[in-house]
Length: 156
Image (cartoon, rainbow, N blue to C red; front, side):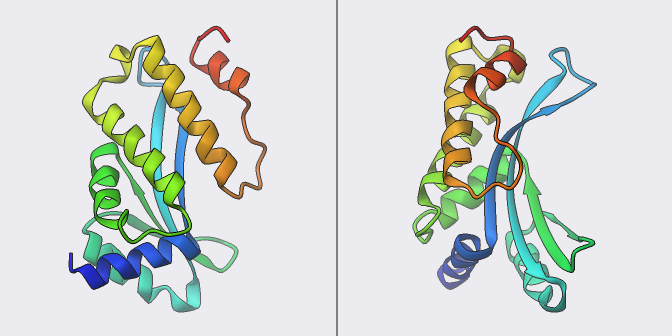
């Protein structure tokens, strides 16, 4: 990726993107849950060509049209997101906190299987989720630390 492309995509992320670290239910695992990392870019469907260009430059992601006239480019996966954030971080301005935290979480999650995460690592991930939630504009109800601990079978 060229420096100018990194700068443009980072600016787009700052303005019309989101960075997420979530705990999701999963029926095909022992614990029944998983951590999910996501970078998402949003654009009015009338101007969605930009998202296709970014998907091509990044070499990953999937594009979907929503019912509200918006199109989104969504990227998941610890290794992929860590690589993208490493490239974009020098250019990110307004979402620097979320980007740094998601980068840390992706590095931890890509190096350790979920079933091998220690209690200390799980608590660290909960703390990272809470920081990202606090920095993000969220329309849905945010989970509390105790709710996240309960999901992970941790004691507060």
